Amino acid sequence: MTNLVTRHLEVPIWLLKFSNFASSNEEIQYYKVIKKIISNLLILGSLLISSALCGQKTTPYAINSSIRETVEENIKLTDLSGNSAMKSIETINDTTLPENFGFGKNLDAITQASLTNDTIIITSFLAARGASFGYKIILRGNTCTVKYFSLADENIFKINKADKQSRLITVACQTNKLTLSQKPQFKEGESIEGVVELTTNDFWSTSDGQNTKIKVQLTGYFKTKLSQDRPNEQDVFKQIQ
Image (tube, rainbow, N blue to C red; front, side):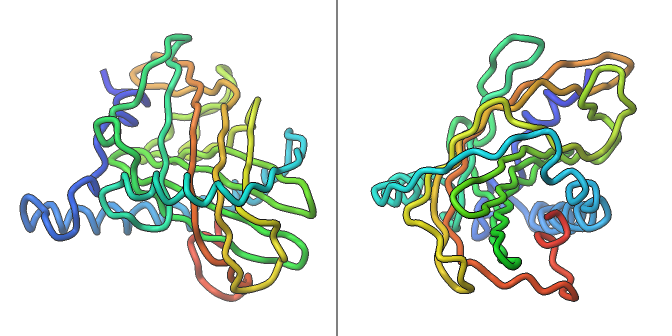
């Protein structure tokens, strides 16, 4: 039976290194998947915008310069060694199962940070076959809000069991911790680097009439530069903020 569990457990296409695709067809499929994900986020981004701060309190974030080493070490464990990494554990119907993404390795994630007035928004997601997921961090002053989001090809997600199914949901976190390598200056071009740890509230997926209760524990390692938000610019990360 196919549900969110099997969707999330499918190995992402980009576990194959760019320089070592098993076939040219897999390389083509990789770019098709990424293009489709970006398209979906552009179309459905307004849902994330409208729910940016609903239902969740802001919390202080920590500053620890030594977190740089943790970020670098975990990014190096990914296949592509880009600017971010992500790993997670899912609790399915109250049973905890480690995800087999990357066969236990940290996976490459796509991250971007933007500045709008006095607010920094960091968005990171991991793309896979069937479903993509990630987190959004909103920084204001000395506090932050952290939310998890998930996007699927079909309407399979629900916040509450009785809700109507949707392709995209944002989920409040029952716990979250954000540690940055330095205090943000809220200036364009500055480096933003840190580790976010979160545990979501329960949410649901539905397939073939069966409801599955899910909770996600996720750790994200990110390193990026802060760009100025440009309202007229067509940017996938801007759209989901």
